[in-house]
Amino acid sequence: MEQKLQSTSGEPETSQLDVNHLRELVEASKILNSTLDLDQLLEIILEVATRGLDADRGTVFLLDKPSQELRARISQGLESRTLRVKVGQGIAGKVAETGETIRIDDAYQDERFLQKFDAASGYRTRSLLAMPVWNRVGEIIGVIQLLNKLDGVFGPKDEIFLKALAVHVALALENAKLLRDVVDRQRIQTELDLARQIQQNLLRPPPEKWQQYHMAARSDTCYEVGGDFYDFLHVSDTTLWVVIADVSGKGISSALVMSTLQATLRALLVGVHSFERLLERLNGMIREVTGGHKYLTLFLALLDSQSNRIHYINAGHNPPVLLRANGEMQMLEEGGTVLGLLPNVRYARAQTEINPGDVLLLYTDGITEASNPAGDDYDIGGMIESVKALGPGASPGVILERILGDVQKFAAGAPQADDQTLVVIAPLG
Image (cartoon, rainbow, N blue to C red):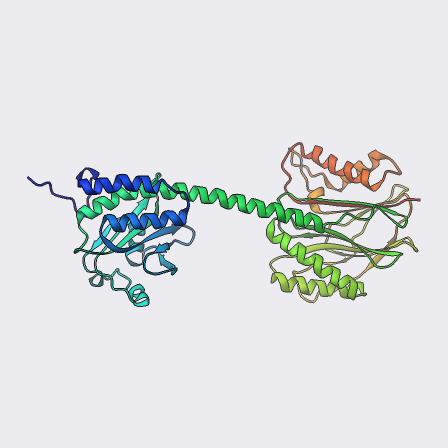
C-alpha cells in the first residue's frame, strides 16, 4: 500500500525521498561544501534547487535582522536586480514571519503574492514553493523560493526534497557568513589601523625648543582613532599659535570632526587675525558641518616670546594650569562656551605672563578624569603633584612622561576610558 505523503502543515520526512532526490542531495552536500564565498554559494544553492525540483527559476532571500527585511542576493533571470521584501509581506515575507512552508499552484489566485515584481520584470509566476532556512539555533536566516515547476506544479515530494536540502543550505550559509564576518572585521581593522597612523601623523610633535620655550606633547586614544587634537603653527619669528581641543564623544565620528577642525583652524589662523572673530567663525563652521550634533572644547593661545606673554581664548575647555615658579597656580579659564553647539556665540580674549621657571599644562579630560579602582579621579591635583615631585627645572618632555606614567599607575591597570592628550610648555631661562 502506497505511503501517504504529508501536506505543507506536516513535517515531511527525508526517508520519503526517492532515489533520484537522494542522489541529488548527496551531490548537493558535496557542492555546497566546496566554497565559503557567499555570493558563489548562493548561485550554487539556486542551481541545485532549480535542477533538483525542475523549477524555471528561484530566489534565495537572506534575512537582515536589524531592518527586518529579506534581501535577494542572487536572482536568476533578473540580472543584477536586488529584491527587497519586508518580513510579513508577500509570499517570502510570510514564510519568514511564520516559519511555515508555502506551496501554491496558481500564484495570482493567492492574495499574499506580490504581483509588482512580475510587473517590473515581465515574468509570469504560476506555481510557487517557498520555504524558510533555519540555522542551528532555530532562527530563520533566509527563505528559498522556487518558481514555475516545468512539468506541472510543485508537490509534497518537492517540499520534502527542498526541506532536506535546506538543512545543508543552512550549514553552508552559516559557515560562509562567519567567514565573511571574519574578513570584514579584518578589513575594518586594517582600515582603522591606517586611520590611526594618518591621525597620528596629523598630530605633529611640537618643536622641542622655540625661542626660549621648551615644549612636549602627546595624544593617546582609547580606540584606534579619537577626537582629541593639538597643533602648533608659527605666525612669525616671535609668535606661535598653540591649540588643544577635545571633540565630544569618541571613535570614528569624533575623529572625522577632529580632522575637519584641523584643516579649518589652520586656514583661519592664516587668514583671520582677530582672536575673537576667528573663534566666532570656527563656531559657525563646526556647527554647520555637524548640524549641532557634535561640539568641541578648545583652548587657543598665542605665545609672544618678546613680551613673555600668552594671549588666549578658552572655548569651554578644561582650564590649562599655569604653575608659577613661586608655587602659585593660575587657571586659564576666560573665553566663552564650547564650539559647534550654539549659534552667534561671542568670545573674549585674555592674557597673562609666562616667565622662566613657570610650567604650562594643557590637557583634555581623559587625563584628569582617569579613575582608580575606588572611583577617585586623578584630577588637577594629581597633575600638580606629579610636576612638584620632579622639582624645579624639569624639562617638558620629562614632565609629560611623568604625568602620563602617573596616570597609568593611578588607574591600576584599568582600561583607558577616554582619549588622553597633554601639552607641556615651559620657558627656560
